[in-house]
Each structure stands twice: as C-alpha cells, then as structure tokens.
Length: 317
Ligand SMILES: [Zn+2]
Image (cartoon, rainbow, N blue to C red; front, side, top):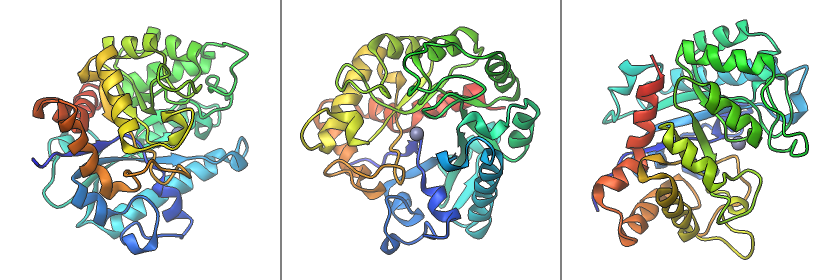
C-alpha cells in the first residue's frame, strides 16, 4: 500500500499528559495515541484539544484551559525531535515533515474565554488555532447539542467571537454546537469551518451527528467534517467495527462530496473503540479498507490529509 499522510482533527491525549498519566511517547503506557505509533501510522498533523472538563466550568474554566495549553507547550518543548507546533501557513508548508508530527492546538469549549473577547487574542498569542465554541452545554457564546430544547442561535458575544476568529485566522469548530448555532455560524463566518469530530446522522441518529442538510452546507462552504471513531456515533446497536467508520466516510463523501471528508478519531477522549480501529496504529487498516471500497488514491489522499490541509490553508494566516 502507498504511504498516505494522515491529518487527525481531534484527540484528547493532552489531558492524560497534563494529568501526569502518560508521556504520550510510549505505547506500553497504554492509551490510544502516542508519538511512536502515530509516526508509524503516518500522522503528519494532529489536532490536540484542550478539553475543559465539566468540573472546572464555569469559574475555573479559564484556569484549566490555560493549564492544558501550557501542557501542550511543555509536551512540544520536551520532544522537539518528534513534534512541532503549527501556527500558520509557514508551518503548514513543512507538512509532511519526515521526522516530526505537526501539532495544531485547539480548545474545546468557549468557556476558556470567561466571557471576554480579549481572551481570544490571548489564546491566539498562546498558539491556539482552533476553538470549539461549545461542548455539550450552554455557555456565554452559544448552546451545545445537549441544550436541544432551546434551538437558540449564537449570543452577541458568540457572534463577536466568530467574526474575531475570522479576523485572527482561527478555525471555528462546530462539532458540539447545537443545530441553530451551526446554521448561525455558517451564515456569519467569512471563512470555512470544521466539524472536527462528528459523524452522519442518517446512519446513526445521535444528536452529536450531522444531518445530510448540514453536511451538504458544510461542503458548500468548503468546510470539512472529521469522522469520529466513537462507537455510539457510528451505529445505534450491536458492536462496531472499522467498517462502520468506512460507512460514514462513504456516506459523507456521497452527500457532501469527497472534498468534505476528513478524519477526527477522538482518540483518548472515548471510552470505547471500534473493533480493528483501537488505537492510532490501526490507521493503516482503515486506509486499506478505503482502497477496498473503491476510493481512488487521489480520493484517499483527500480524505486522509488534503481536505484538512486545504481548510487550514484557507483559514490560518
Ligand atoms: Zn469532543
């Protein structure tokens, strides 16, 4: 099989590093993601999320977010021969680096801003290049998908955040955002957006998944959806296998165009994994499956890396 590069739009490994549970270097320490297996699998760029856990919200959210960002810098500084921070177009051009994995720092949850727009400038200066406006709850920017009864659009602050992210050159992530918020972001944003770790609702009716209408709109706006490997998003019943991820990839490609499909494993953020796709080292099996179901080499390159690379080139400065 050809050597494909992989861009993974979401993992939660950073928390494990910051909590001192793992070095993210050594597969024998467990978990889904480490530099050793990621490099062998062909990961050229990994989005690393600073996911702010519920226990810190709302009062300690900024504190926790900054602690995770500091942890990401420590991780990158500790292993300069293995990873490097991606800040803009200049670093994107270095991908794929023959020896190192690019790290794109993202924050999952607008609570980090503490309801202040200036905090967006601060986290930008700290190297954050993607922000999920919400997790599942409501915050000062918008409603997460857990607030399904309200159908609220973005708040005034949420709208300001979208426009300011456009100005700074940050990627807006709508993976956990409610549907009304999703449409509001698409209406407002001058740059394409991403759902970095979501699947197709037509195949699995979960509120975290996107309807065909949403997928189509995302594609029309040159956005990307990173297919999530979480079994509960892949299939409603019975055990899930790698082929379920392939089904979602095929569906999104069919509905929204192959140029809209990416990968967003959610490794180290999910407590179950599909059979055959149990850690970052299993990516090669997934790519082989894509060949088997008839995607061309060019299409697999788009899905595995080029769509996210195009999106980041469009958005980052
Ligand atoms: Zn998430």
